[in-house]
Length: 406
Image (cartoon, rainbow, N blue to C red; front, side, top):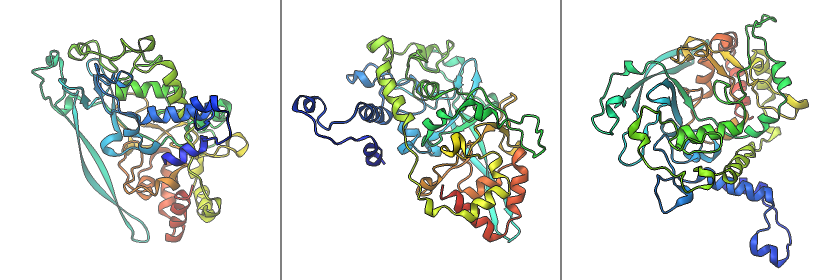
């Protein structure tokens, strides 16, 4: 992956000796930004103070020490490293941070257990669906202000939360280029065409809740919440630490030595953003696209949400980037109007994801195969799921093969 990403922006040409002294590989300015951004994406941050001044500022509370830890090779995360929990707590902040710098307790630890249900298809195929249950232990309360005497409380104290699984970043920059008018044209909040699909726009086009406007905000927010790194958009050097977490606010940070008092200054942030915006889609061999499966995909209504053909057919993410009610089974426990609503995840890049040994799908990674993921669909997708279940074995395999080829 590293080599392939580098080659895309590598420009090999003849240059004079003076230029070669500064840029011996003759990388274009855009290519240099890409390579620099990739290095920042993969960089492991450390806590302050540190002799590596350009890399300190981690935390004090955090979930990961690098972008790549959650997005391995710019792809999806694993359950161990890529699953975070959004909350809305006066004390704990917006997200549970399960790691902390030396000398500090983490906010909580999360244990996952599963129960199972079995879906039986008409051809007698049995599919085991796993239902996750989350248990939060060693949760920090106000008794932990000084970093000692923390109290373990019951999980019932954290009953409103939203699991968020790290998505793949392939092609995310292309999503920014889709005109807003094309996205809004696909809205049908009142389901006026009576197809059971009532997609609506969120406040943005990124994030599982379509609540992030652009990649600049998405990147800055991830740095702040996941790593505790400050940037221009999110300048708090303590990340998600709240004013009630005095034990967190008392720790040193990496902002005092950096340009403009930020742990990642504007030039470095710009390079990181450039890299993320230009992460390419995996190369798809169009000759290997399963046309029979695409017909099934369209016939059972998958394309109602997983749409393509933007910008005169040049951008095909297989997503309308809108919010849809996915039913009770996939709802989170957040007490708000979006608890059942999820942005349609783009499907492009599934062909590359099939090469990964362990695969995770849906917003919480509960599905470990495309078949499981489809059978979890509900709400607005219930009709399509029932149509999928009624397919013949051959049609079902054609559909899965199509998804694995895009």
